Image (tube, one colour):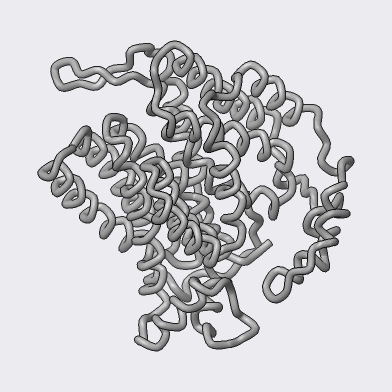
Length: 391
């Protein structure tokens, strides 16, 4: 649990968030299938404009997300050895401190890096970017504002993952190393790449759905408890020793928190959403030729979704896969076959649009527009800190 600035509804926040979402939709349509040298120049010309917009709007937020105030303090006291984080993140903060960059400048840079990594990753999916881009922004935005250092590290992972798809092993390894040196939690998605990468086939959706239903409705993490016995054997120093020494509190039975569990309707909606993506993606893959990279993304989504259901009530374990949820956007866009008719994008199977509507309405409505924290730096001092929990 952490403190954040709770403001209630603010008009400037609603307008600026709407600008981000609407511009991502417009830009996504603008960037469809821009290939070749000329296409690449135009792709990055439009992309950089949006990156700057995103960096300014998100970088100027204040106290939004459960970790903002914590990382504001870490930045201000970057040279305090007790605040030492992973080497890349800490080194960057210290360098920015030496240059005299204010806190909002650091958050602008974090935001720019994250947005750049999105466009770098999506450049391999230009045929579906019209839908993948806005979905990627909407799905990732609420958690990006909360898990600041983890998304900083995940930015490097996205870049490395893109190089994995292009089979550029050295560049993949280099950016993978940067991601791990920014946050050790990046070992989890990297291990998924290494383990699942060689597979040439997608996991059977029917079995995945059955396991998903079991984990979601019948599995009880608090009664399994075995992971604590293994975690306690680890010997990590520095920033992670606290978690190891207190593994019962963070990873054992007492780590399960009811406020993190979904309600009945929320669980049903999530089940429909996830299982629809599993089934429709798998159905398309077994009927048509598909890129190898899509198979890897599909398998990662399956594993991360199942893992999420198993640890739903345990915050620190949920955080391991939370950034990977944005990969749903690729599968949604892949499932919906786009056609152009008189300049209008229509779905080949119209019922599949239900999935997109769920994302737009539930995620944008609940997690973005209904965010309890809607402050910007010009609101500093107007609101008091309130204890919040990661959702």
